[in-house]
Each structure stands twice: as structure tokens, then as C-alpha cells.
Figure 1 (cartoon, rainbow, N blue to C red):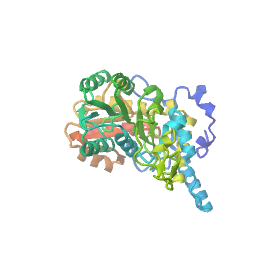
Figure 2: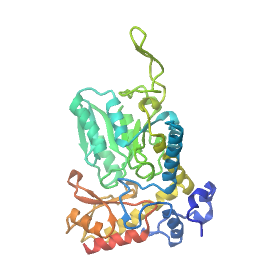
Figure 3: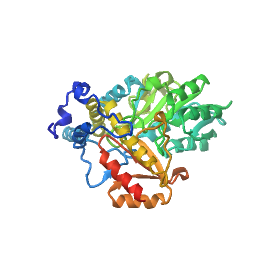
Figure 4: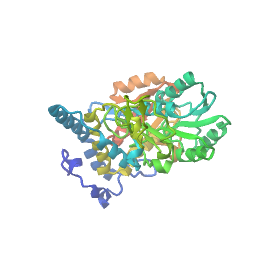
Length: 417
């Protein structure tokens, strides 16, 4: 038995490729995880301070951090306060760039996904009457920045509904593109049902038609095998506090290098410029640094950002692919169990594997969604209700710290509802 306290701190990076762990996260045809993996994943669960008084199924809103992330923040804060310095955030940018497989110069540090989307929405060169394509499954963080620009700048928003399959969704986006369309601004994974959109194909479609493609990536990092250069999008905004299990108040905006002189800087501060002079006549701003660092500015909380490299290291020690397979295996187990209750459940998350992630959305046929959530709370579950867009549904998020028996307990509650 591995020492639980020091498990992840001492786990060699090479061990994750060993034969003993080669099958981690794999599922059987019925969506059930192999029993022999459970000892390992119970050790992983022990790395979280997350209370055992309830079953946490709301990672899509807020991801609990492992001890190593909490410790990194605490130690950094103690050190900075002892020295009286405010530190720097370079290590966070380096770790994120490595995790996302992009150069550091394409990463802007933000505090959350919404901040990154606001940078996208206001930085693009759009004129009155230009159209932006959104879905009707947007989180407020993607809807409001574009709605605000429409309100203040006169751009037009065109709304499509994701379809049951990736191919159909792509067709709907293609059908919405018109002469004045300038931007496709959709989620990588919807916050409502966990539907994965075919973002690589959407990007190719958009670029073939001369459009900007900007993605709400709030649910991407940590829940999927993410390669932003492979996706090819122009901008990708995300946070570290959901699936990446990182510090709250940290995030990033990826800006493709070729877009740096197109996405206009709206807010500028120290280290974003190439020189300025208030004594010149007239006063002059020489220009912007040739990286995405131009979009982040001002004093950042270096202690908080110290948890970002620790979060990335957590994934690297276990293996991103293994964590993703584990979380998706649990979601598949849940969806299969719910589909076996057709008289009680209406499934909202697509069954197509390419369109399914680590979040499952459903309705109860004979019970109000709020009433079910109240019952679930009394039974020790933390779920997420989805009133947005009139869905009036339940969303369940699964991550590597969850256990198969927790999924089965929820299924038993649904069966009685």
C-alpha cells in the first residue's frame, strides 16, 4: 500500500506509464470501471481536503484543489509576507503553456474565464451590424460580454442550438453564417449539459470563410486532452479553478500569435508596453510587447498563482489521459444508469461519444428539478441545477476524486424519485 500522505509528492513521473497503471480509467462495455483500479483511485481521493460528509458532483462550477495546490499557495503567501515582496507569476505562465502545448508568448494570465472572454469580445475589430454566432447554451460569462458589446457597439448576435451529434452541430453553424458574420464564439463544452462541440472542425469552417473563432474553454483544461494549436482557434479563454483543480481566481486567455496585432488591447498596464514618455510633445506610447502578456496588467496575487504550477504537476504526475479517462468513465457509468430508467429520466447530454464529456445533464419526468436537488442535498449530494434557458434540469460533474459507489448511490436516488 502506498503511503497516502506522500503519494503524489513522491510518485515518479515515469511510473504512470508502467504496466501496473496502464489500464487506469478504462471502462468496460457497460460503462463500469475495472475493480482493480479502485485502490489507486482511493489513494488519489486521499490527496484532497474535500469533506467526506457529502458527495461532491459539482466540479463544473468549482473544482476542489488537492493538498499540494493548497500547500503551494500557503507557502508562497508566507514567504512573500515575510519578505514584503509581491513576487511574480512567471511560473504559472510557464506551467500553463506546457500543459496547453503552446508557447508562453501566446498565454495571457487572467482571473477567470469571463475576463478572457471580455478581452476577446472587446478586442476584435467589429463594426455596427457585424454578426457573432453564439449558442443558446451559453454560460453568462460568454453571453454577457457579447451582449454588452452588442448593446454598446451595435453588433448583432445570431443564436444556434447545438444538435444531437457533432456533424449536425457543425451543419447548423455553417447554416447560420451569412454575409455580415465575423465571429464564431461558442463553448468548447457547454456548461448546461456537458456537450462537447466539434471545435477543431468549427475552427476550420470559420477560417475557411474568413471568420474569427473564439472559444469559451471554461470546461476544457483538465477534462479533455487539450492541444490548442491542434484546435487552431484564434482565442481560447478558460479558468484554472474548475477541472484543472487549481486556485480560485486564476485563469488564462490563449491568443494565437498571428492574432496579437488584431486583438486590440483595451486595458494596458506595466510590462505590456514597449516604452512610453509623458515628457515628449506630444506624450507617446511606443507600442505593445510582442506577446499575449500585453493583455494582462497590474499587480497579480503571486501567492494564488503559485498554485497553478502545483495543479499542473498534479495532472502530470498521474497522467492527464488517465485522469480524463477516469472522469469520463464515471460520467459514462452515470449516463448508462440513467438511460436504464427511461420512465423516470429524460437525458439531455448526447449519447455520441465525441459529444460527451465529464458532465451529464438530465430531467426527472415526474419531479421538479429543484425538488430533486433538495432531496439530493438531504442525502449528502452536491449537484448543480440548470435553470438557464428554461432547461430546468440537473447537471452532474464527475472527476478523478469521485468513486463508482458514489455514482451508484445517486442512481439509486433517481430510481426512487
